[in-house]
Amino acid sequence: MAASSPEPRAGHPYHMHDAIYAQPGALRLVARGQGEAIEAAAARLREMDRVLLTGVGTSWHAALVGELLLARVGGLGHRARAFHAFELARYWPAPEARTGVIGVSHRGTNRDTLAALASARASGGTGVAIMGKGTDDVATADWTLRTVDQESSGAHTVSYTSALTLLATLAAAVGGRDDARRQLQEIPDMLALLLGQESWEDLAARFADRRVYWFVGGGPNTATAWEAALKMCEASHAAAVGFNCEQFLHGAWAALEREDMVVLVAPPGPSHERCVTVARVAKEIGAPLVALVREDDREIAPLAAETIALPEVDELLSPILPPTGALWRRCRPSVRPARGRRAWVGGGDRTRSRPCGDGRPRAQVEPSRRWVASACRVVRRSLPPPARPRR
Image (cartoon, one colour):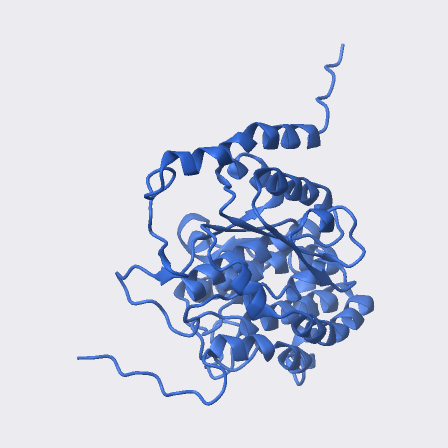
């Protein structure tokens, strides 16, 4: 039976485009009418011996950001930990008493996330579900916080940033942080300005023929890098990878080629110094760098082929801002690829083997390796001197 074609759209051809630009309005409204539930959940979580955040896919990335938010903004420290729901359900023991679980699931149907919420409640703990609208409340959760209506696009964008906003609001309530609440109120306008300051289609067209897309960040933006790579894979059917900045410098950079592209998310914070080294490595190898940095950045911006200015915001809240989902390409981000099909993107088959097995003569591949020794020196120079042994 042939699959039916989607209804023709009167506006932009892709649902994902609509979701990206709906974010500022959605973030202004996401916590409205949920204040009492957020405060009640925060009071209960504050009493717990530990709080586990869990999810799968995009929801897992939201849980990782939420871990740092609850640890730092919420003041829970090491009591807040994020676990991938698949691993938590199959490899970790059941939650002990006085354990809170925050489960993120856009559709509210992931069985591993639901199992984690049920385990917390069964052990005498508490559960908070964060999910989209249009689904039933989770019976095993004490509170269900709603993000947005279910997205038409198969790649979640506004659902992700809305979940991050709810997690940040919850963390601010746990920690009694009015300063964080005030910054959260400013973020929708910041995001609207950020989305409007670039010609995203022109930027995507400039870098539409890259071999591999590398997304790199540190701290809370490690999850941003992973999420951006996921979006590039599922929405553009392109080869993309995401790395923590230190993990990238710990060997992965050796696979970087001049035909690739690096997107670096580096607001001010403890990871900025290592992000500078990532930018220098990309420069040495010759891969173009798109840097999401503050407007006053003087270390990474000069090394970038393109800079996107981030507004002044606490680094822990910055994952709500980077519009990496807008870097979509000439593909169909609103439609999932057919199972078993190779995705043809940007004029080439992205399933080719590498290196030297992709049809290019070796002479076209080897010159990029001339920069490996130089990049090695950049990485080594960035490392602190070894500690002297005690006598």
